[in-house]
Length: 368
Ligand code: NAP
Ligand code: F7E
Image (tube, rainbow, N blue to C red):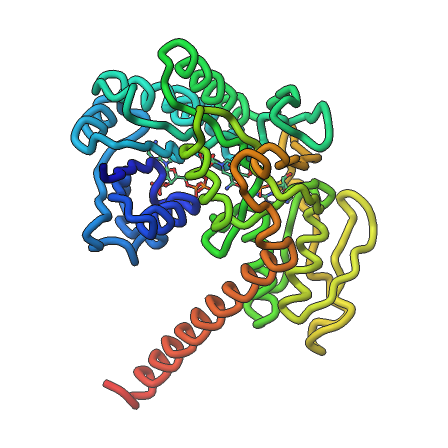
């Protein structure tokens, strides 16, 4: 029987990598997109038009749209990746976050039941290490108690429990991957890693003066998104529906991430001072930058409650799914992201130069 996957959140970082992964495995892939004022789907533009890749309009806030798409596609696997995924934004839009990240999960499960697919369709829920929040144990595994510490995490906790409930109440094959932070060159630009790699590239190329960050001491277990989507698939290929922690088992601070990112961009930083007064100073690199403060701390990027000590234990995923958490190291991940942003910024800089030259030529009447 041919495998048919339906991905919510297909335009996101993970949705794009998962689509590529499933297409390479011979799946027919369907994605749910929402109408937006700018119809530019950068991360999946290269997949549009492929014969096995199809897009449908829908929204996690609209159960009728979900029932319609699920009924039409009749997926054998659903990957529910759609979410308001930014923790800081969840403090500004808590109700929207709850509607999409909590009730939205329920709507997906109910759509499967409404279409009578509960015995044939397996469901993956994108759960998160944010459930551990104000951590009660390090490192965190599948038995660590949850202590959500943001509106995002509280909403995702509902998602986790409703999936478990439907598994037990209706015998559905639905499970959660408790994924720790995973990043890539496709990561949204306001998450801390991408914000840092873009800034390092811009500063190295003279297009930005300084980078402002929040809590530099926050600790994360960062992996590569491309490696993590394989695990989502493995979780649904398991004999029985179970929840899994997906992490590298290695922890670093935001400060360390910044140090290595700037290093790959040719700038050596030294951090001095503490708390709000901490600064990253250039001690080696391009002459014009040496001695300058390139990283500063700003209150604007502090959260009302912050999660500061995430560190995952992937033992279960290694043993039961045969997943390798060490495929891409922290240093390799930083390098991949910085190299990609160095090229992106250079291309943008070149395009800007062409525009500036053209404006000058038009002004001087050189081109008409
Ligand atoms: P992302 O890049 O922010 O993508 C989120 C996706 O959700 C986008 O495709 C977005 O569509 C879609 N979306 C948002 N609201 C929607 C709605 N109301 N209806 C339908 N689609 C909606 O996130 P990601 O990093 O790929 O993460 C994927 C999932 O894993 C999320 O659920 C996230 O919470 C969870 N997670 C992520 C991490 C991580 O480190 N990346 C770790 C643990 C868990 P638009 O393009 O239209 O905005
Ligand atoms: O923050 C600190 C910030 O926004 C990481 C989502 O994918 O992973 C992600 O959530 C840490 C936090 O990711 C800045 O306070 C310092 O402690 O990159 P982030 P996140 O909050 O961990 C989890 C697993 C998910 O499930 C989410 O969907 O970095 N930090 N300075 C900063 N963070 C940001 N964004 N910007 C700063 O300037």
